[in-house]
Amino acid sequence: MGGGDVLWLETPHFRIGSTLASYRFHNDAREQKALESELARLKSKLAWWQAPRVKLDPWLRLHLYAMRLEDVYADFAEWFGYAGEDPAKKKSASGSKKPGAGEAREPPQKIRVLLAGKSSALARYLKHFADREPAGHDRFVLAGGAQFLGVNEEGLHQSGYELDIAIHCVAAGALVHSLIDAHAGSQGTCPLWFEYGLDHVVTRGIDERYPAAPPNTVRLEEEASFRWEVRVKGLVVNGAAPSWAETSAWKSWSEIKSSGHLVSWSRVSWLLKRKPAELRAFLEAIAAPAAASGESGRTSVEAQSAAAKAAFGKSLEDLEASWRKQASR
Image (cartoon, rainbow, N blue to C red; front, top):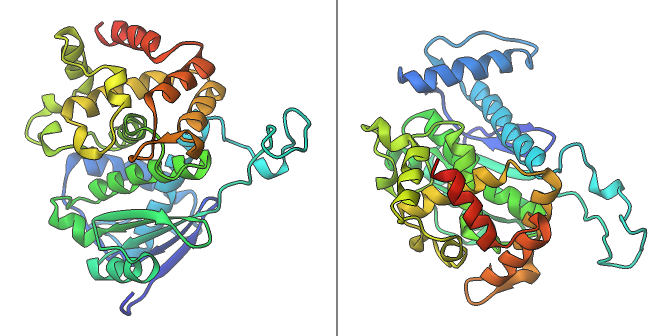
């Protein structure tokens, strides 16, 4: 890590190391409102408390990020029916002891998170453990099988993400992808429309200004660009929304244009209103490594449609019609 202090904190689902420095408030109205709510919650969790005046010190930032990561985990677990469950203690629903006959998987290992203040710190870690080049954030599987998520504050600052709430959005959005891999036994096989749609659901719940999407998807100076419901309706009404089959065939990030991010968010938001058991069955089917196909390693359109039929009783084509009717209202 290149020297310097590393602060450590462990939660029920994460092991976190941080080299983040103090953060001085930027007087951003959205961020200040969010921080007031978060600090009120955090106060009740700490034995000693002194309200910050002009900045967040390194320890307070670490505790905030621990709470934020657990918030994302709690939402994910509730949506997909993992809440309050210990898979290691559950017996097979069928009572069979044969491998693959409904056996519960081992619970995912705690996710390792590195919140790096400097680009060099994350770069050294990535080079040593994964022989990867530095980035604003990165994630992969460690040798022992645990998911790793690294966030580089300095690198994100250079990309225009100067607010702490912007870094919060990046960390939370990246965590969504790690949670899918951890719980569904996936390693990058989940369809891109579902991964990024869920990513947008989470990040828009934090701050609508910082989605994981092309720069022109949101324009900070134009509030109207944040109103994705209105924009999705326009795409549907004008016949410009990519079909579910089209989005299901995406193989790389470059194929997802602004309209693709908008409709993916809308479709996943719509699906999340269904029962957790149905959503879990769908997720585990579309993200299963066995369902991967082709050079992209992503689940095929046919397998996605079959998973929808099995989980929801409707094919992707049937879901498409229902979603378009709802989105055009």
